[in-house]
Each structure stands twice: as structure tokens, then as C-alpha cells.
Image 1 (cartoon, rainbow, N blue to C red):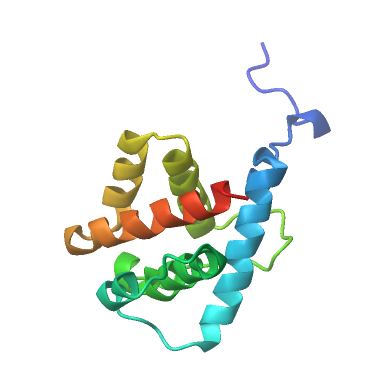
Image 2: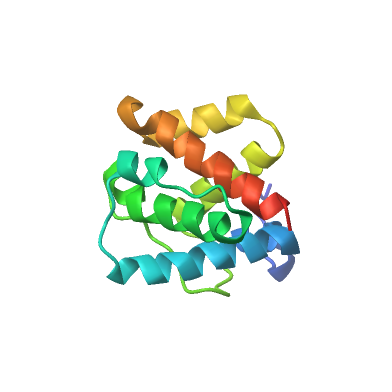
Length: 142
């Protein structure tokens, strides 16, 4: 009796980014490009970043992305990993962020709350939720 069969090419799991729709891969690539820009920029205090965000549609999309990515390290207490734009694989940080943005867009507050609470200390949770919801809102306008 054979319990395990040999692994076949058809058994290969799809890469996580391949599971995202074209729209969400586009959002991910914008966030990856913003992350590249933020690597060389000074880190921003999370509370200050949320206070200075613009309500103008033409700058809000970039402002929300930059604010989140500049503050993410402070909020999750580790350096987040973002791959180069166009990379098929997803880092844990990218997968977490995309799940949060997708939950926000879909109105799934319970999943968004769970994701944020799983990684973000209580004092930062409200601000991170605000930024993630802002990103979701800005990308849904296009």
C-alpha cells in the first residue's frame, strides 16, 4: 500500500501573487514601488503621518501609501519585506498587507480587525486601520 505518491508537476502550488487578480497585482506593485521610495526616505512617526494626510484626491493615493509604508516598521516592530515590482512571489508582509486592503475593500471589518490585531500593538491599531482603509478607498476610485 502506497501512502505517498510521487510529486508531479501538476501538484505544484501556485505562487501567492498568481492568486491575486490583475487589479490587486497592480495595487501590490504600486505599494512595492512606494516601498522602494520609502527605503531612502526618513521614517515618519505614525501619529504625525495620519494627521497630515491630504483630502485632495490627486495626492491622497500617494500620501496614504507613503504614510503607511514609512510607518509600518514602527507599527509591526520589524523591518517589512517588500519585493521588487513585478515579482511573482509575495513576502509575508506583502501578503498580510494585501489581505488587509482586500478585507477593507470588501467591507470585511472582522478580518481587517483580526489582521491588524495579529501584528500591530494596540496603540497603533487605529492609525494602521485608518491608513489601510485610506489605501483601499483611494485604489477603489480608479
